[in-house]
Length: 293
Image (tube, rainbow, N blue to C red; front, side, top):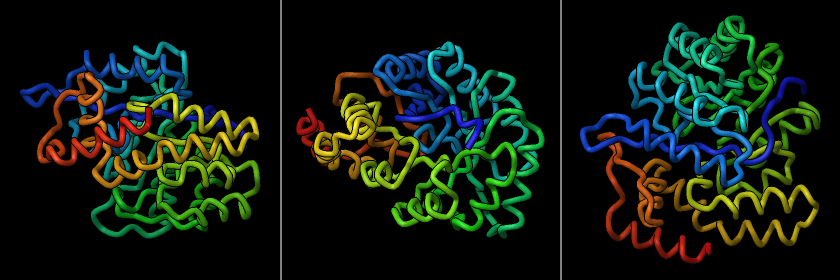
């Protein structure tokens, strides 16, 4: 698979808000910087962790530009550009490309259930408007659409669609992708609890919010697997397993914001209707984080 600029641990920054409910760009840049210097192999703003659907257009644009300005080309940038309509998805994708994003990620968001043909047409129209690659993001839990392996295979026939992020939590999907699309297919794991199994299934990388809290453990897992040290990879995985489950169960923005706070860092505020974790949930998270160290 050509034109695949990502590999390894791709980190998803949280979008912090100030007490007045506005995006805190200064704090966002500092959080992005932490992800870069801690060793992340790529930065992906405006994903689920970055609460893309909760943002106004001008906020999405500001966050995209802030990421690219802060990263300064040190690692590739994967910008989320998804929208309900094809027209607005194209708009945000073209903005990201012009701003300097390495690639864009698109999940087929919908109110009405989309047909496979509608999804293919959606991606195709966006691809025709771009020269940078596209990652097709399959996450039915948040997007409301479950793209079958057969549909993903159709999407990969679109020249600019060169990557797949698989987040259903079904490891068999990943085995299917590798077996039926070939060993060179560039698929990425988006299900945190499946991190180790996904690498074993052939995932090229891991798209995750976990580096906000435990970057070294995430990198240890990836590097150990790459070096063929299965025992070390298992050890790193089991050490972080409880945290990976927790952040998914409680919701990535809530869990990351609380985790940063517990580590003595400023994670900003959440945008309503999202609310901070309850005291007992924060206590549970504190215990999990202590066990990771």
